[in-house]
Image (cartoon, rainbow, N blue to C red; front, side, top):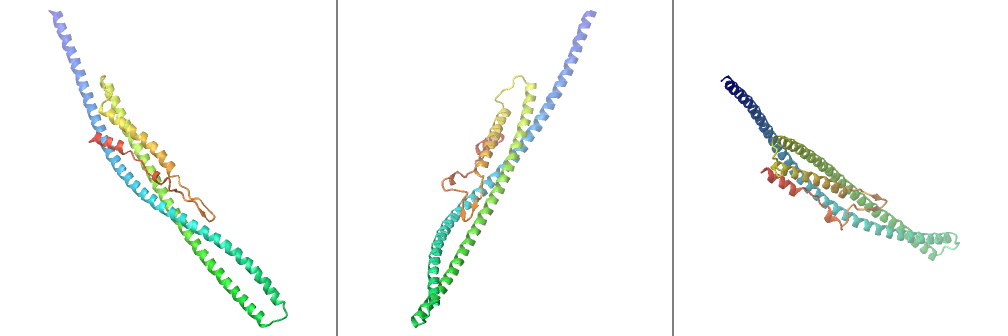
Length: 279
C-alpha cells in the first residue's frame, strides 16, 4: 500500500511539474503575441511613411518632367538663335572683308588726290563723294556693331537661363535621390523586423509554411528594394547633364531624338502590391 501511495505521490509531483511547464509556455506564448502585435503596429507605421514618401516622389517627378519640357523648349530656342548668330557672323565677316578692300582703294584714291596739283571742280566733286561714302561707311559700321552687341547680349541671356534651369533640375534630382535612399533604408528596417518575426515563429513552430503572409510581404519588399536601386542607377545615367559652352557655339544638353526617353520610373506596381497586402 505504501508503494501505491508513493506512486500516486510521484504522479502528483509530475503533474505539478507539467503544470509549471504549461504555465511557462503560456507566458512565452503571451509574450510572443505581444511582440507580434508590436511588429504589426511597426509595419503599419512604416506603411504610412512609405505612402507619404511615394506621394512626394510622384509630385517631384511631375515637377521634373515640367522642367525637362521647359528645358527642351529653351534648348531648341538656343539652337535656333545660335544658327542665326552664326549666319550673322558669316555675313559680318564677308561685309568686313568687302569694306576693308573698298577702304584700301579709297585710301589710295585720297592719296592720289591729295598729291594731285590740279584742283578743278571734278576733283572737288569726287573728293566730296568719297568723303560722304566714308561717312556712310562709318555709320554702317556703327550699326553693324550695335546689332552684333544686341545679338550677343540676347545669346548670353539665353545661356544664363539654361544654366539656371539645369541647376534647378540637378537640385531636384538630388532631393529625389535622398528620398529614394530614405525609402530603401525604411524598407530594409521593415525587412529586418519581418526576418526577426519569422525567426521567432520558426523557433516556436516546426511546421512553418514558406508561403505565409509575412514571407509574401518580405518578397514584395525585396522586389521594391531591388527595382528602386536599379531605377536610381538609370536615373543618374539619364540626368548626367553638363552645360558645355565654348566661344560662340552653344551645345544643347538635349536632342530631339531622345526626348521621349527622359522619363522617371517608379515602383508603381510593387508599391500597389504592398498597399494591397496591408489593406
